[in-house]
Structures are given as structure tokens and as C-alpha cells.
Image (cartoon, rainbow, N blue to C red):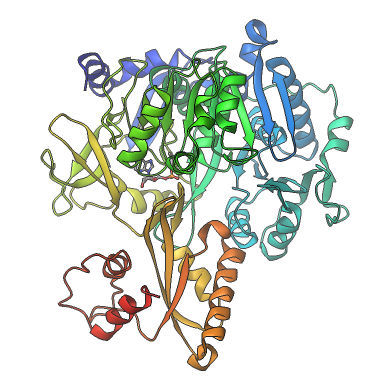
Length: 632
Ligand code: PRX
């Protein structure tokens, strides 16, 4: 840690109130807060108590005077060939209209609105319109299948759903509305109204009279209506975002309002070095936390221009990201290791032919960044590439360097140091004592969690405590469920998850969820899903299934057919992002004598490593089968 950053960090821990009072001045408050932190009921923290603010006001209205004519958002779709910029004044108008539409449908403070949309401007209008009304948005990633969408509908209980006829990916139309209808038919508490942005991509879009409404028509009806901002007390919820864990049921990460706004503004200044008037390009999707924080809220709260990109990194050619950087003078870029690995395989010409002089830093997160990719991008760009580590739960970086405070040397493969505000420790699993330098430990945060982090699990306070704060019985600490290690220079490295979560191209998936989907196949009796190394995507799921009736897979042909059927089940329940690379059929799964599945051993064998201690193994033949299976 550099001296200056160390001081900054220390102050954030030792003079917490003073530190965060200063950061809180980066946003607008309708009413000032009375207390920086209320922490009477650990681990539940309330930041900026008594203060009133609004995310939409901070993201739009407060800029209108000074930068009404500046671009707030540039939408670029290489799928439809569209490029459209919105100034802050125009964005304000669009969001007002959208808020008027939602208000007209009875949406008000505290109501949930489910947003299931491709990367189009209306998705962002809808998010900000919810924020304006004090409604709680729950954005569900468009790649999730109907069953996953239904699960999230039932948990959030939305009044209204906002969707589109279709999205597009790599030139292929993805019919969103069809998927929504499927989800609505299985959901127990489907929303009363579905608002559809009709892009004209799906001519066969089905419509349900009385329930399905056309956004353009409603927006025209509400043209020019004034929708004042609904001021919220700082700890009132702004949004829910679902994420996967060890169980099959995703958790709704609940975020507050004031703490999140402050965290966003502070991170833009101290970490991302983004200034008002500059452009930020985050290559994520609004369905993920990176999209919420760094496509929508942080850049807009800080008066930047944000790029909303619908498309893949290699179309029309692998230079598209760099062309965008040149054309829009991007200053801050945020992407993912998988995205960079995709481009690494291409001709470097695609990068070097563009003028990238506007770019200050590139930030990468979401999955482990391997050293070769880190050094390759740094050299190819000639700019600092910053690996930083965080989670849906935290909403902003946990481990990072903070060039806005001090530029510190980058170590390839390391996300540097604890971010200010996080009292971070590496704890020994056995007794929660602190690990030494170069000793592996669980990455843990001593609560209270800083502003911007999740405040609870939606509708389930108890689950918040039992999931995140119960790893150690002797200490109340937040577990990230990641292993980490710190070297002698104080740089941290992430070594992988402590639980059964896997990370496929930056998408976080629970192996339990995939197992449940595989088990939906009528011939599957039992299954184990593990994540294995993948050169491009970091990890991929592999499934090992025991069938009920082996006659159904007696020939090579029927085996292949059944493997396809199982994959189709996963596609239908979770979406193609969770599809196993292979489904192997075995007659037994390796278990301990007490019946516990030996996942780590299965994973090790599948990756060609030593399976470890097998003294408790019930049936050695089961393990041999795994070994044989992965050879095919
Ligand atoms: O295992 C860590 C991995 O991704 C998890 C969080 O994923 P998600 O909730 O989707 O949030 C992503 C926000 C950027 C973490 O628990 N992870 C994230 N960033 C890194 C990482 N692993 C290694 N290095 C990283 N930089």
C-alpha cells in the first residue's frame, strides 16, 4: 500500500464517521442526515440515518443546470446498427415519461417493478423511473430462462413487469416476450401488468389483452407530465438484485438509497478517476451488479457520459470496443477477464489501429484475472490495467487499488489492497484467527459493512445473518466465501470460492441450481455438478449423472441424445449460461461412508489433479468411473 492510500484507508476505518461525512458531500441531500451510522442491531447497518435523498435526482436532475446539454448516455447497438445519444435534459424527459407511465399503472413508493430487458435505453429509463418514484426495481438478466424468472417474480412480488419484444445477440433474435409469458404462466404471483417495449424484432409476439401494454403508446399518453422526485430516507430500499449461492434458491440482495449513492460517487472519484464530462464504457449488462453500479448509477451520479452497448466484443469485428473508445473519447473502461481473453486471441491490429489516448485506466472484475491476460492487456494498451475484486452483495470494490487517491504499482494477478471502508481480514478457517502473510485464509469483512453494501436479503433478515455472518461461531464477520492470500508486500490474491459457487465467464452460478435443473430430467436419479477450469471462460460446469433406467442410454446414440436432453433442461430452467460443457453418465457418485458427495475430489479428477484424501470413500469404483468418463 502506498503511504498516501494507507493514510486514507486507515482514516476510513479509524475515523469512520469523519471519513464518510466527507464522502457524503459528493451527493445531493434533500434533508441532511442526523447520524452517519446506526449500528445498534449488528450486523444490520443503517447509513446516513435521517437523511433524505433520491438516486434519480442525483443521477439526472442535479446535473440539469450545469450539464443539461451534455451527453448523459450513448446507446450503441451493433446488433441493430443503432447509435443514439441522450443529453441529461433528454434523459430527464425520457425518465419522467417512463415514471409517469409506471405511476399511471399504480406504481408508487416501495412497490416492486421487475425489469427483464435487453441492453436498450428504455431499460435504463425504467430503472431510473423506479428510483424517481421510490419504487424498488428488480432487474433480471435477460439470459435467465423462464423458470428462473418465475422464481424471482415470486420472491419480489412485482406490481408491474417491464420487458421488450426481443433482444439480439450476435445477430440472433432472442424472443423475450415469449419467455416472459412462460414465466408468467408458472409464477404464483405474476404482476398484473406487463409493459412491452416493441422494437419490431419479433413479429409473432403474443399479447394478452388487458395485461400486456405497449410502452410507446403509454409514453405518448403521459407526454409532458411532471413526476416529482420521491425523497427517501437514506436506508429505504432502492433495488433488489438476485444472486446465486450454495442453495438452489437465489437471494435478493437488497440495497439502500443514501449509502449506495455515496458509495457510487466516492468510488467514481477515488477508484475509477472518472470526472464529470468524461466518458465511461462498462462492457457489462444491466442484469448484473456491474451494470447497475457502473453503467447506470455511478457514472450518471457523477455527471459522466455512460456508454450502453448492445452487442458482443467481436462483431462487426474484434476492434469494436476500441473503436468506441476512440469515437467517444472514453476515459474510464470497465470490462471482464473473459472479454479480454476473447480479444487476446485476435489480431492485435484491431486494437492498435485506434487512437486510445483518452483512456486513463482499464478496470477488470467479476472473475479471477490470470497473470498472462493481465500482462498482455497492460502491454498491448500501454495503460494501467487494474484488477479489482467485489461481489453483487457489496455493490462496489472490496479489493482494489485507488488511483484517485494514489497510483500504486500493479502486480499482475492481484486486485491490490482492501478498499477504504472495508475492515478486511484473512481468517483461518479453523478458529477465525488472522492468517499470516503468504498463508491462505477466508476473505472476511468485520461489520458493519460500508455504505453501498447489501443491507439484508429481500424479505428475509434471518437469511442475511445465517448466510453471510455465520461462517465462524466465535466472531460476527461477513464471509465473502472466497479464499485469499496476502503477500509480504501487502498485495492480495483471490484463490477461489470456499463454497459450491462457480464462475462461468464472470457469471456467478450455484452448482446446486444446476443440479436441480439436471434432476428435472425424468431419467436422472442423482447428479453432481462441478466447475472445471476453462481457458476462455475461467470455469465451466460439468455434470455427472446417475440414471434411473440405464436401458435408455444403452447405445452411443441414445447416450448422446439423452445428454442433449439434459442440457435442454438446464437451458429451460436456468438459461444457456448454465449449460454443462458435458453430461457424463455414471452408475454411482463418489461419496463418503456417511453419504456426503466428494465434490472436491470429482472436481480435482475432472481437472486432472490429485483427488486428495480418499480414506472416507465408500466405493472406490465410483471415482474410477469419473476418471474414465472425463477421458471421453
Ligand atoms: O468469487 C469472486 C469472483 O466473483 C464473485 C462475485 O461475483 P458477482 O456477485 O457476480 O459480482 C461480481 C462483481 C464484480 C466473487 O465472490 N470475483 C469477482 N471479482 C474477482 C473475483 N475473483 C477473482 N478476482 C476478481 N477480481
